[in-house]
Amino acid sequence: MRVPPISNKALSYGVAALISIAAVYVRYLLTPILGDANPYQPAWIAVVFCSWYCELWGSILGVALSALGVSYFILPPIHSFMIHNRSQQFGMVGFLIFAAAVIALGQSSRSGSTSRSRLAAIVDSSNDAIISKNLDGVITSWNRAAEHLFGWTAAEVVGKSITIIIPHELHDQEIEILRRLKNGERIEHLETIRQKKSGEQIEVALTISPVRGPLGTVVGASKIARNISERKQAEAKLKAAFDHLEERVEARTAELWENNKELMRQGETVRELSGHLLQNQDKERRRIARELHDSVGQLLAAANMMVSKVSRKTRELSPEVNADVEEASGFIEQAITEIRTISHLLHPPLLDEIGLESAIQCFAQGFGQRSKIDVSLVISPGFERLSHDHELALFRVVQECLTNIHRHSESKTAKICLSQTDSCVRCEISDEGKGMPQDQLSASRTMGVGLRGMSERVGQLGGMLQIRSNGIGTTVTVSLPVTRTSQESMTATS
Image (cartoon, rainbow, N blue to C red; front, side):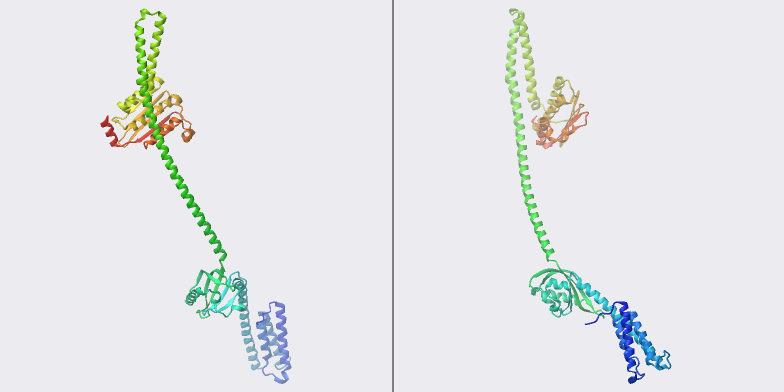
């Protein structure tokens, strides 16, 4: 076992001086036997000892004391530092030169030893298992972390094959690793399986580097092994959680998709019911209008005729009765007018007989007379007949808008614009009233029944209803898609 060099400077100087003095004293005692031949033999022992175990300046001190001691006590003349011949001179110079060489070797050895000791300490204190092996796979070093990781001590594994920690089924992997190392390749972050002394298998990450000799050839390998079993277990748990989450997301997505399809089916059903409701509502309006016109209107007309007959016999009646008859006749005429108006509002006969253009003109004229609102109507040239559903929807929109203008806007004017292209019909109703609140425009829940009804009618035909209001008026725009075929068919029918 190598004795470590003396690190304390004072002790190093003291030991160097003591060894040098002892060497000179031994040579002095041997002078009666040896004479002045080979005066430096014991001094060489002191020089070698100081060079190896004392630091640089201690070694120099030892050489200087040895040279001075030999010159003073051994070389003639005794007790003098004078050198009298060339032989003594060459001997002293040779001693100093070779002593300097020995000191240099000792210093180099101490530096290398210190570096190796430091490197060995670093390797031994590393948290990663560090193992070295030769190209035959024989373990040459084994640090403490390797002992802790694999369970074998360095004494148990050094000199044995590296396959002691490799499962049998992975021996081919080790052969391939050795082949790559011989080619000078470095293997980084190889995740594999290794085996502990207890037989337990663990997952490790390996970094294997080739070790080169003084001539640059690969003589072995250094292996750093890190236990990644806990990380792998965490990754497996994370992957399992992720997969479970993916399954839940997929299941929830499928559920939402089914719910969405169900909502779409329900929405479609609601739209169909709404369409049927609107159709039934229009049929009922038409029936009530016909009943009012045909039944009630005829009864009122007959009553009016009877009152007229009575009024012709004024001479036979008293003045009071004549006044009552005239008043009853006026009431009947007013009732007939109201019945006719209500009948036309429920279902305008002109809509079926002549078309949308004439029906809106008639309605706008009567509305203006009743409400005292100036209604202007602008219809683009060449406006053709539409399908019954389209004409009825547009008429109801105009009817509802004018009613809202009369009830809510406080506007004195209203404007209706009708235009038509080959693929679309457009109706715009505007006023100059107080407008609509913005929250009512943005929230569909606050819409009135009339606006919802208009929107539903337009939506049933694939159209779009837009309402704009800025505080100085409101504009309702309806766009309905139409086909040329339906227009030609309606024109031919009319």
